[in-house]
Amino acid sequence: MQLDKNQLLRFTTAGSVDDGKSTLIGRLLYDSKSIFEDQLDAIEKTSKKKGHDGIDMALFTDGLRDEREQGITIDVAYRYFTTPKRKFIIADTPGHIQYTRNMVTGASTANVALILIDARHGVIEQTKRHAFIASLLQIHHIIVCVNKMDLKDYSEEVFDDIRNQFEEFSSKLYTKDIRFIPISALKGDNVVNRSTNMDWYMGAPLLNTLENIHISSDGNKTDARFPVQTVIRPQSEEYRDYRGYAGRVASGIYRPGDEITVLPSGFTSKIKTIDTLDGELKEAYAPMSVTITLEDDIDISRGDMIVKTTNKPAAVQEFDTMICWLNKTTSKPRAKYSILHTTNNQKAMIKDVMYKIDINTYSRNEEDKELGMNDIARVKIRTTRPLMIDEYRDNRVTGSFVLIDDTTHETVAAGMIL
Image 1 (cartoon, rainbow, N blue to C red):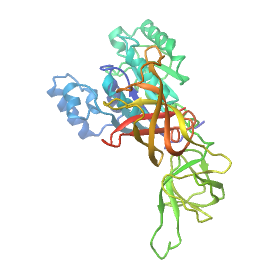
Image 2 (cartoon, rainbow, N blue to C red):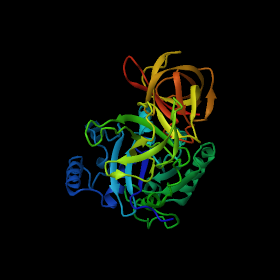
Image 3 (cartoon, one colour):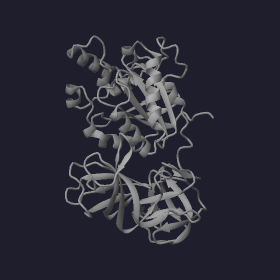
Image 4 (cartoon, rainbow, N blue to C red):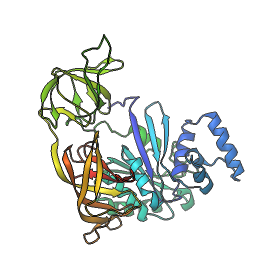
């Protein structure tokens, strides 16, 4: 199958501190010639000031002053680059345990997760944590990059041992497409160009793998979901009677003439047109932003969902979910929160904490009911009004939500509906 040159691939990096995530991204950008000359000049000057012999690749992504001073990644850094085969968005996420919530943010929209492992240390706790989160977030493809192979004499035995360590626990993950690449981000081995130091590795370099990995079938093309963001009513002579419903297609395909149902009201109609700034479309699919007009005048507002009449999501007030607690303040028993699900915002509470997960052993702790920063747990949520939901494994948009503290307005948790 030939790839679309304009196809966008989002990937996230994860790994422990000093595993070389930022250096890998810098090498990827540098060797693929995706760095502007003024950026390169600035990084060269900063590298010299820090006493480096060559270019410090990590400086291409460590954008915050504290990151450059400490030599670590704190916030999620997004970078964009293009090759003749694909467009890419990179989310460079932090490795520290206290920034695991940032990793969840960066990974939530990714097609691929790059998990870095230091060849000297092998699989460690953070490796398992990041692999579990990537799997929990239903990232369909994981590429395990065994980095710093130059410090282990490019040993095939070291690489095979780490791959075996990872495969021991990866059988418990949801992700089934897991690939392994031995690299040296510092030296450039197997990042963009094939390594001459590891002729025993017969696979493709990292960039070639990213360019050719198949993601077209990852999205949900079956369940049509269109959360309404706003109602378009132009006050002009030309469009006096125009009423359109604007939003982003979450999944599925919409075409003029399709029979639809508006939830939660249950009213039915047919799609009249699908409009964009550039004109009408014959079909719309995720993640396109469009305006849909209907043949009937129906009362629709933000938070409603337009779906196919023959394929509707569940409308529920109580559901089970896996959540990652993102806030320093611990959860309060039966406390009220605001829940933001697609474009729908209403009140909710954590009815019950069924168990917390120990990401090292993947065992369940049913005794501890308090949720703290970075905890991952299965909980029961109850909302004031029904939400139109799908399981997260089927739909990452309608199967996810965030909880917000009404007093501080901080996001306290991200959830994946089971």
